[in-house]
Image (cartoon, rainbow over the protein chains, first blue to last red):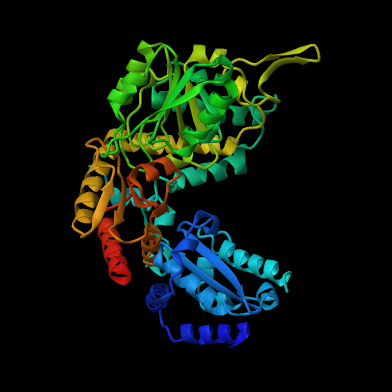
Length: 140
Length: 404
């Protein structure tokens, strides 16, 4: 298992190969389509992230000291971004997730998609992922 | 015929680039861009005329007051109001509706009814919900038909002697439907109800005459008609405005203040507490002049042409469904592409310099009505062109290919 920092580095390298926004967006769309499906029973309103233009469901499970996140969205671009966040944070331990610095967002040119002032609510998604981490770390 | 390239040249922002592309601005329903004369009027006000209004005896205060009141007269003429003091300056349409809702609740008793429609913007829903909650009255809702028009038969059945107010939009911001407000006003008056029209999407697109229309209240915003943000109008008939209690209190709105009791100023000042957005009001006059020079009817004719062209081009794309297909429509097109989320489309076309709105357009009941998460909305203005529509259509096609 790679660390959060290592995975971010890999993502930055992946995105560095793309010359323009079209390739970047196509990559995001592919990631969205490839995202492992969430169990239907978790697609409930309690798991919806507030503040997104598209609906995002997030579920977290604590398995052997690690948090496993699953998620879904009705918009494929959002799903792509969600997939990246899951790639970075899922399977890590709670304290690392809670304190993780997600510098890769600026470096892959998706800052505008993740900026707190935008109407997409993905900042809320990161916040929710970290809140789960804080809650689970208290169970440790 | 309008000289559109000449019109465009008056809007500096239209020549800027976005994401490396020429800007195509199709979000006019949210706010319009501003012509140079409006920008100049704001800056000239601060450079040459700034002072507080209706107060000082000094030269500049007099000048600022003249400019401010000149704007009121211009708006009075523009909407054909009988009296100048029937024009109240507010922060915007939302503020105008809140002003009326807050005062109107004092007229209401338990069992009274207010009627709105399913088509309303949240700003013409929530103030009435609060008004009803606080006065013990009931809110009734006119449903919309599949084509986005109000169900008028349903409306006629709702009307009764309990109906005290009917609050509906002139044009739906999410569907573009031009509502038959003449009929709504006539029928409402026949049971003694007052009528408030939310004219935010109509004021620069349809020629208005308050005396002919006979609405009791008509609300609109400067920023949706080439004017500054933070300025709105509440038109109200003199006698109703006189009977309506004040909204906000403070300076400017009083006649005499003492601790044994305060008397309120006459219209319009009774509803204009505090220092208003003077520069905005002054610049709004330039926006109205801009519209008047072009003539609202010519604007409407040109926009209808754009609407027709955009609609037919859009329908050539397979899987497009347009929401709001009334015969009488403003240049607003809400649509979805089968199987695709509006947000995804908006994100991709943005990269091609196209500014369109995606989401629920502050009208969640409509989205529920059609059982959709939102729509993509194109809303056109007089400076838009068929070439821009072509660019937008190509961008949508590109998005469709990328997302499918």
